[in-house]
Image (cartoon, rainbow, N blue to C red; front, side, top):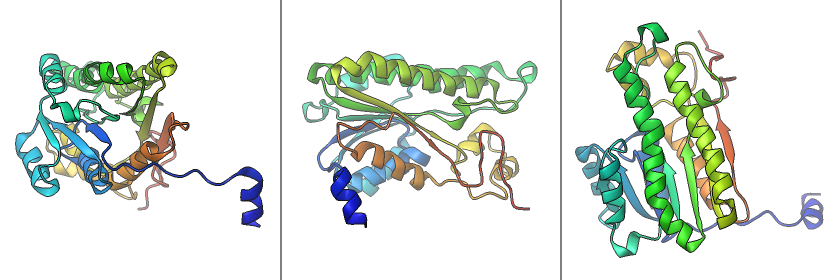
Amino acid sequence: MVSDVRSKYGKPFTLKIMKNKIILITGASSGIGYATATRFAAEGARLILCGRRKEKLELLKQELGGYHQFLIFDVRDKKAVFKAINNLPEAFKKIDLLINNAGNAHGLDPVHKADLDDWDTMIDANVKGLMYVTKAVLPGMVALKKGHIINLGSIAGKEVYPNGNVYCSSKAAVDFFTQGLRIDLNPLGIRVGAIHPGLVETEFSNVRFKGDEKRSKRVYEGIQALTADEVADALLYMAKVPEKVNVADLILLPTGQANAYINNRIK
């Protein structure tokens, strides 16, 4: 029966080979970025791994080897972003895929109690930083009329949860920027997509709550959150589909999560 269906509708498409593809990943020193780097390295890709923590990137370099490029900069620093990307060795200049992963959350307070510095940090990294990196990478893709960009959004960018105000706003901006980018680059044959994970157990909550381990652990209590590796697997799939296919918008949730604020927690 399966063979009959396939003969009628055609064979399933063949996933692309990642070997020797040049892929730039921001926020590669931990969490989803780290897992994504190891996944693509195992596929034989040539990676440009970016992060702001030198010691973390050094550990990643030891694990993956010197075959790749390692760039130390903060995506919020516009000059540093353009300098690092513009000065890539010739062999790494033709970037096939950009994965804009860098971002953060700081605080979980109502607007009238929130810290303005937290707001600035989230907007500068999640929105402006993502735009800076995209702008720096795009000239090469435009010249070749070829390329692929995947932005890391969040379920928080699709709907607001209590006290998520500015973080949710920053991720909604990523969502709309992605849509605008896809429209602008469509005539050039450059694919643009986004993945929007729900609960992922990484150091995300520890950063959000400024090292408060107890509060961080409560975020994941009673629910099987996604792992960074599972998000990395989804990113790998998005990258490997044929060029005629674009996974434009992918929401990835753990089974126990219904939306941004409803979770089936086992007590």
